[in-house]
Length: 209
Image (cartoon, rainbow, N blue to C red; front, side, top):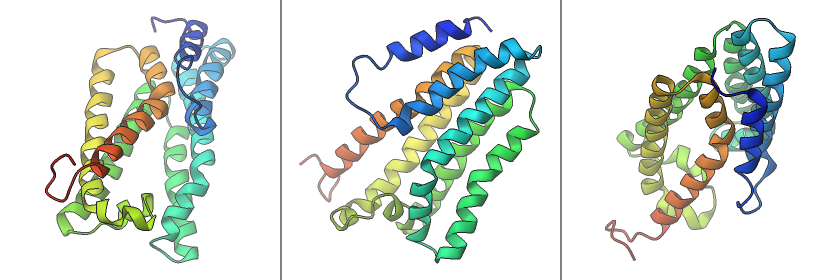
């Protein structure tokens, strides 16, 4: 790995200097990863194991911080018990996968799998003419008229990030990918916000208002 762990953490902090105030759920998991990785690298002789363990901890923090929101989205589609079971299954499945991993590629491919699953769900909604998933993300009454375009937009969003992730896996070192993952929530938030605003400012014919 070409970049020193502590150098990555300093670079990570510098990326937030000129950004508006953000929810802590966007940057705390990345901070956990970039603090945990150098510490575990010192404690473990196996650098790959240290990477995976640090990623597991950071992913656990990200899932824990987003768990309530995931349950709320599930409750818009399912009863309380099925929603809770599904939320727990989605939360625990990636963590169980990483518990058996010993190579950074597992972490990288897990991120790609996330985009495949979420993008696939939205794609299925588009093909079947449904907007249930989009409605669970944007439940406000005022967003109802935009749901079809939001569903299509989410297909593009997820598969675009899938392509970006796969490109980075093949072109950059694992340490540089680690920094990308740390800032990914902020990057994804900014891109998604811009796309949603674009959808809202389109008329029914798909032309700018």
